[in-house]
Length: 389
Image 1 (cartoon, helix red, strand yellow):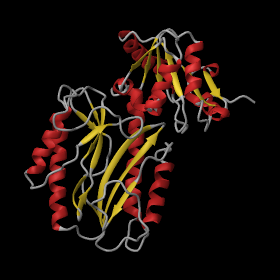
Image 2 (cartoon, helix red, strand yellow):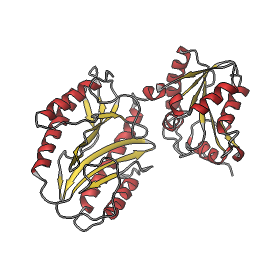
Image 3 (cartoon, rainbow, N blue to C red):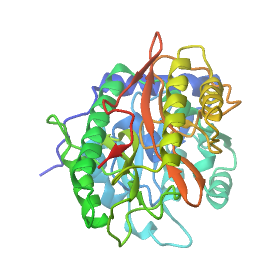
Image 4 (spheres, helix red, strand yellow):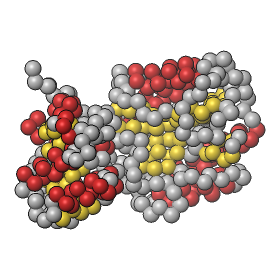
């Protein structure tokens, strides 16, 4: 029995639209073939979200071919046939002999495909930031007559402005994130283990809400007293206590599209310092959202937040947010003072105002948002407050 096609997340026309935008940039740079290796970019262009990027794989976008060709490990080819919108003939599985082989690997299979397809003397684009220097040298030495050009983060920038179909998935992901945070409010209690609480919250993120399941589990952090000044650790082998503060960062995921959310919890009355910090952060969040609109810059958003927070006697040293979409972070624009990126409708960001001030003081609040024609839409429906338990 042949592998059936999964129900496609988007119609083929949506993927072809995205590919057309990439090809337009290829044509502008006189690039005949592009090797896309970033898993998020492959997902954007094909619908593929399987976890096979730990070994060499590449999506070859040829300027004159309507559909791309995917080169992957043989055992992962059926997943690509199942998930990708492209014809099954365009999924090529390379043999297991290329795995853990010091002399020849999956990159050789990708280069072989390029050479066999007639690109031996062409301009070939690659995503250099996703390749090792050794792999880049292999491209250059095995295709000496070709010109290997860095395509940089171009696909990431193209996917920065979402279609309405993508926005719909991000709203669904946000509803799942809300459900996960509400589950946290139900299960966090004195004497409950952090692991048991995490298990319940993550289970909710998978079960989803409103008939929409979570299709993946994104990074999850639960930082409870005395570890509330940490940013990126998971639950500990410990229990909650009366007086515990808990900072949670989670996300809902729908077919790769991610909506993130942060909130702070307190078992019992929060400290006066934490309350003052929350007041400053909440005011800063509102100030930042008021600036978000087409034509404003990412730097403008960060400045509005920082200036408002400063009035409360606090400072945030890290950036205030970043582009989000497929996967948690899009490596492009940041809500950071001086970032000149101009906001456009249907750009999406995680306005991440987590603040780790000292070893005994940390705080979490955030919103995933969309730039609209007139201003801003926030995806979460939860109140912007410390959840006192």
